[in-house]
Structure formats: structure tokens, C-alpha cells
Length: 91
Image (cartoon, rainbow, N blue to C red):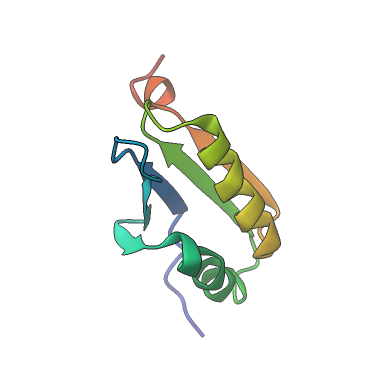
């Protein structure tokens, strides 16, 4: 049995500019749009708490953030929270 507490799962969208889709990371580990659902499914299939957070750069369109949220729900995640730069800065 794994006794280490589950780390919070954060999917980060990194703006690449020039009309490109944002780059993706799951907790610092780079992933792709194609692999995102499979990775999240793997991560969450053994977890009791199916909660994750999405953090997007300010320049990332909300449509891309919403897309990640949809993919997360399709992967079995129950709750998705948003981390914004404003929240992180404490206001």
C-alpha cells in the first residue's frame, strides 16, 4: 500500500505564442494534447480523490483551458479547480 500522500495534480498550459496551441505539463512533466487524457486516466484510476487543478498562462485563451477541463472530466476527474496568476500572487 502506498503511504505517501497523493500530490496535487496540476495541469499547466504554457503559452507558445504565434497561434500555436499551448504546451502542456502535468506537475512539471511535459505531455501533449494527444496524450493528456491517457496520462490523466492513468494518474487518477488509483486515486480516491479525483480532483485536479488547471493553471494557464495569462495569454492562454480560455477555450484551451476549457478544453483541458473537458479532457479531465473525460479522464474520470470529478472536480477541476482553476489556479490563476492572480490567485497565486495572493490577490
